[in-house]
Length: 509
Ligand code: GLU
Image (tube, rainbow, N blue to C red; front, side, top):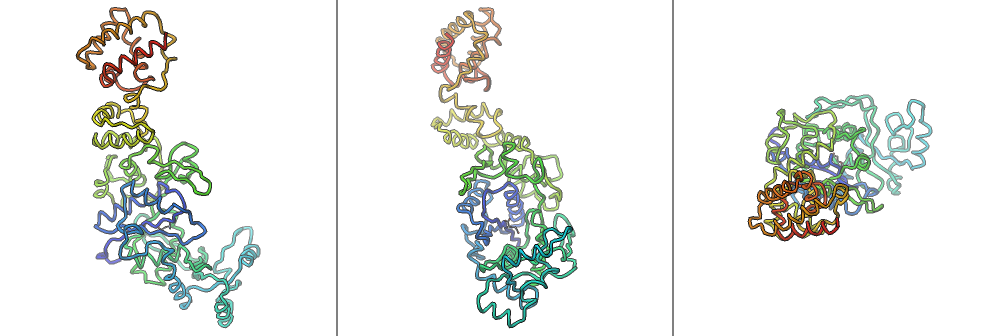
């Protein structure tokens, strides 16, 4: 690749369902590389497999990227000079490339019916090779333009006989390339089957479309997940045949993201109760909902940060990176080649750190949305800001803010009376009655004053503060949690504090 080539990278998802965190990491690394080099980041929709079409999946990908703040420069939405950006709309242009390969003897027409293919699998099955592929050993015994006469082939084509175009993989050659992460990678062509390039419905397969589009869209670097490494020899060969290797993008295959047992899957998420998709995804066929990081309560800042370090580090001890820092620090050379283990506890740690790191007003705005989504509409912004600052150390997820703040805005729904009752007695009942009388007369409604008065009354009644502080907390909060109880009372205000104490005293009888 010549060095003066403009950096143009792409994320090329097939819109078939939820967007896995590995996909978002691929987006992120592409995005960082593009921003770093003043290049372009392209989103191309690879929807040539019509049997896998899932309504809504494309729109969902855009929503995920918008939430993560990783929007493309060119796509079906943004437009651009290299469109269309949806492969199904480019259908007509691929056939010519496939036919060009046939003319040069690098691909061939194959007319085999599904029954014939099945028969082949039976005929060539051996103990060592239980699922034979359509490859150099098999192709000479099948019904294709390599075995049929030119006249017969022409006749079949003229009659519109169902056919595909397959690549003719060379026999026992080595094909290699330099991966920016893995270094020299090579494959023996005999191990690779004659992949279909153009399907019977006239659509290209992924293999043909990805190469043609990377070429036409002037992609300088093709970055993708490791699961695509086995396809690389087919792509390299297509590059060589169609466009010459010197025009080929530089490749990098990112390490797998590992779960508790192998590649992190949606099933791991369901089993261990953590999200695997960026945002909630509802399968339109089954109605099954898979939870996303967004809805689970992750900040996009934290999500980006934790994805960035799943497979990369900057060589220092630093763990928290903003998107801008990542743009300046990221380098492909420091991406690991071995799998990166996803640790949900650590993911929550990142989120917690970002909750603390975010500007108070910004955090408050996000919490406000989370509360509204649960039906708690808060209109007093300064109060919410105060409350959020008071409790934010206690939240790992944005959704934790509901339990941590709701009692400031409405009377607790559930009262953990069971935590008070066993040790409740007359003395405590009278003590709280006195606290109410005292608080009614307290002019300086400040945490410190409230605490001092409370402790004085306790001492006068021979009660240890610890014995009555938990009941007070439950009266105000509903449960055994929350920040300093007198800070809570200060924020609740005189009338509400007294009302809640009175109400609980009534319940305790
Ligand atoms: N369409 C492929 C996918 O679904 C893209 C792989 C590539 O980037 O080459 O991930």
